[in-house]
Image 1 (cartoon, rainbow, N blue to C red):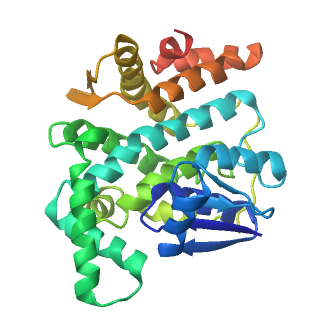
Image 2: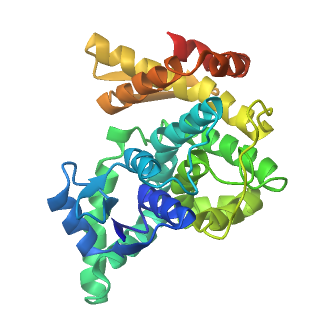
Image 3: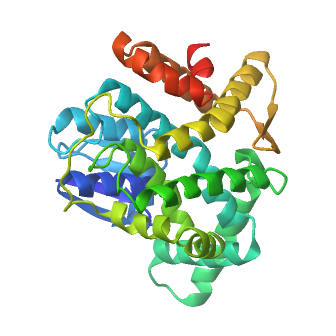
Length: 331
């Protein structure tokens, strides 16, 4: 029995919960003050989600946890067995975790209507009572803290046109896909679907992006509820060498045009000792402070690609070159 300590307003909590559900791993879902207390006392980085293992140990950081579960439980895994497909799934998941989270943060905290409603909901989730005045006072304090962090993560008014353009591009690709096929690499979900789901799940409840999803991407919006609990889904992976679905090519094109330039510029700025960096992508400018973690993400993607079997790299090279991803992976 696992215990997942998280929050409904945490994209990584929703991602990990969806994986546990799909994999049919027995677990309890704990959210609220107890989850925050666990995060503050049981793990090195005090952030949710935290997964308590059956042996009583505590772990966080969603991707390493998901990969560790792959090694512990062989049934219903979320990493495709074909190395080439597994790499693409991991790349899409990384993009969702490190870039699409900016959409979640920006839509939630840039507009007053979203700030007010979501801060109140998140305070309610934590307190589960205690009176409306106390709850709303806590909401205002949390709202001020989150709005004050916007520039740190690059979610500013000046940067938001690129964040929104890339979000709409992702949603358009998913909308075109999900009416034909549910999953990206066969009839069962991978790391990629759960990574995308985690971030977009939050857009599905915040007022401004929810209205956008309902109006412009209604089937992708409904798809979120399917990914939330796929415990009843059985399926198969596409055979190795099967051409990637158009949605995969579309997502890789976004990654090549935006995400790798973002990661490259961050890594170069860090190496030069600069505090900020600027890119232009999809017709929009973007400036942010440097982050060491995202430099590690780039290094890990390159390492992962370098250790792929030669046959897998040979199959991927044309697709990665076509979508603008290859050079960044081999630099």
